Image (cartoon, rainbow, N blue to C red; front, side, top):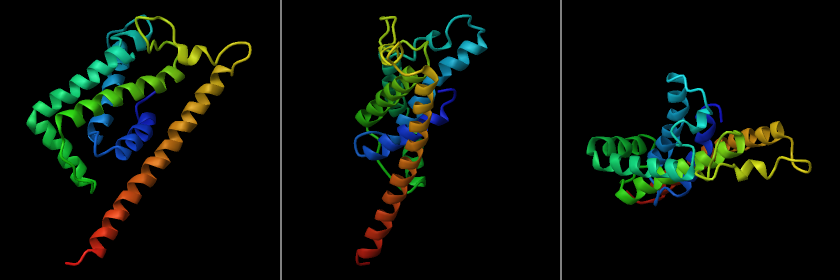
Length: 184
């Protein structure tokens, strides 16, 4: 994707769906972490493929970076408290654990890599294997035209924004209903 906001729908939806096991702020932050690679490539005037500058857009390096960031944020108590505060602020309080933050970082990075592997030709998700099997299998004499694939990925990302917002609204309404039904 050109910029991170496309990813937030899928990441937010998956994070909310598995919020008891995965730290939602961490899955979103890991998503942002990977796009720093593209910004750094531009800042350092990197002449190669921008998604190969630091190899963050790979399942191996990106996943390790996401998991390491999750663990680091957990051990930096003020940052962990910010994540917990953010969840309380949106009405879904949760307690961050080392496992939930590490899993959130790992899953956030992997989802980002998989989306970008379908969208950008220069992503090498299985690095050190140099090919991108996710996109190369769809392109060819019997495959889809590449811009069509990109359009499908964009549409899917936008659809997940809607699913993310619908799930969030449902969780909030469910919480309000439970509070209203319980005796005071």
